[in-house]
Structures are given as structure tokens and as C-alpha cells.
Image 1 (spheres, rainbow, N blue to C red):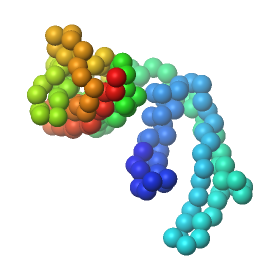
Image 2 (image 1 turned 90 degrees about the vertical axis):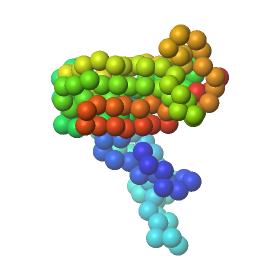
Image 3 (image 1 turned 120 degrees about the vertical axis):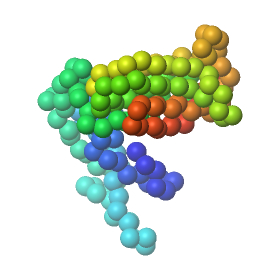
Image 4 (image 1 turned 135 degrees about the vertical axis):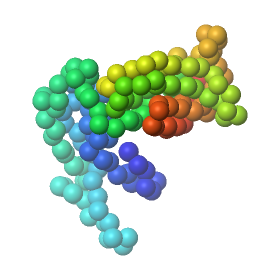
Length: 163
């Protein structure tokens, strides 16, 4: 989801799919949210005067076996939940076999925790970070970064630990 204004957001098909597939699977098949369009002067609500829009998505054909997903590109998805306490889950896609590194850093760039440092086959992976460093000691509340690195891909995401 990309927030464009204080109360507005745009959702990609991938964001809807990821939310259904990874956060509520298989409990939710109907999504409800407020839908409005505006030209800057006049605002028009979709479906009814109260602004409730309904969309039903059939997720029955999406499957439940993550091992069958073979991504065509590398991706590091935002962690869930974020902010988090006591643990958060990272989902990432590996498009080609190779060594994958997932590392947590603090604001000063100090390495806090290595979550993954191994050869991985193409697929979708998930890993949980429980807010501890490499010595299994709890880290302080605050902002951290996760960096995913492969031979042909690098991405960084912000994460927030709140105790």
C-alpha cells in the first residue's frame, strides 16, 4: 500500500493479494473499505452515500502451498506486523538459485542480526525476527533496517520495534 495523502491510499493488485494470502488466509474473502473519487473540489463516494464499498475476491484458486510459488523476480516484502512487539515476519522471493543474505541493521549501520546467509532455491520464503541480536539478547525499541542481498538484487526496508 502506498499512502498518497493523510486519508488516501492506492492499492496494487499485489498488495491485495499479499494481504489476503499472508495475513488472513483463508478467513477473509470479502474486503470492505471506503471508496471515493475527488477532483479536488467535489468528492463522490462509490456504491452508497455512506461510502462503504464492497469487493469480493475469490481466493479459493490461489492454493495454500507456498512451495509451489516460483517468482520471476526477487522481492523483499514489508514485514508484518510493523511496528511490532515481540516478533515480526518477513516474506521474500528468490528468483534464481544463489546465496541470500537477510541482515538486520540499526540506524548507525551496525549489524544486529543475520537472519539468513545461505544458498536458496527459487521460491517464496518467510522468516521471523524476535527482536534479538546475534547473541540472542533483546535489542532496544527503535527503528531498524532489514537488507536483502543476492548476486543480482539488493533491497532495504525500515522496521520499527516498539516495546
